[in-house]
Length: 109
Length: 315
Image (cartoon, rainbow over all chains, first blue to last red; front, top):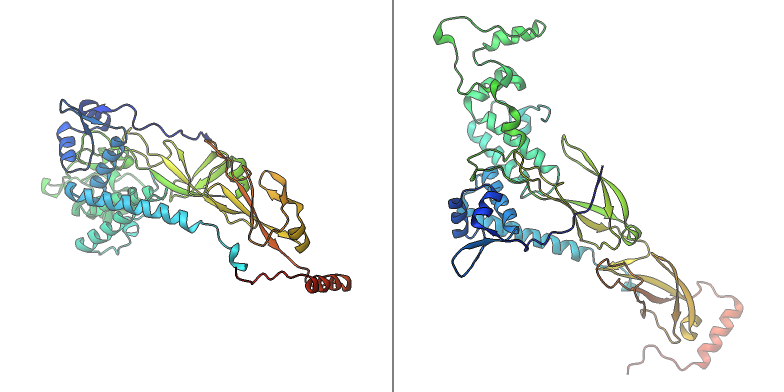
């Protein structure tokens, strides 16, 4: 089977209202409110006080739920876990770039 | 459904493990193989197995039944005596007879496991309700490395990759776009971790790793090749052929080129699908013959006598 490459979707396009976000993410609005309060989700708030969620927040929500379901991490600790996981990912990516810098070459001069 | 493996083996514990040690073994493995922590495509399957094994062994009643009836314990009706079962199996796999007897002998099971569809329980590991939400949970993204030669990165093309997993070896035919760079991530939509019950799967990211090349040194999209020159070519100027991934190119070496000078061939590095291609640098490296003929020696000696050039003089 051949799998076409995916174009990176413009995640910022198409913000979701709280209702649509809850539908798409499969969670109760109350739960979303809790996750927002804990800083695990990062919606925008408009002038009327409504929450708007970027599509990337669906991925963030899914990760919160997987970590909660799979490891039993409580929601308060999840913020720390996620920050650390993101930092590790960034460091690993940087490490990959630095270790692949050109080698050899000028040492003989 | 994965072929049944021994739950104790899956968790790496002995059959007489205590509940505490069982939990400790499980927690450790779960942290290692959780798909949000371990991006390896094989990790998810492993995590699923670990979770299933622990779900069963951490429940004393289920563990007892697993010990008695083995991997098929869910197919065994709740009121079957282990010895009858063992005899039935030994006797040619007849279906176990239900024990007739006084009511207090009949073991009643909560739920009756034989009725539960295993796929709903374990098919989607995060499919269960009460896991902090209501709907099924989408799958996690996964990452795998893909090693390409500089030439492959230059031209792009088809590439077949095999992802290892304990039960789930997948072969993907991937189209590499021309001009990928080291560390770049190629996204394969929906090829990552499977989601719970009908939820979206995650994406699989192939992280490009450029294999070390005997000639090209890579920095982003720029390539550097060593350009060996004879002393007179470097001193007098020359037109020299260099290899590039796109074929041979001519480079004009200006007069008075010393070792280490980088001559740029604009746009002859790795292509860029979204902008300017990288450059290719030919780095001059002056070589001398290891052994001189009499005539060469005479000429070099003559040059040495005539020249006032001192490469070590300080300005």
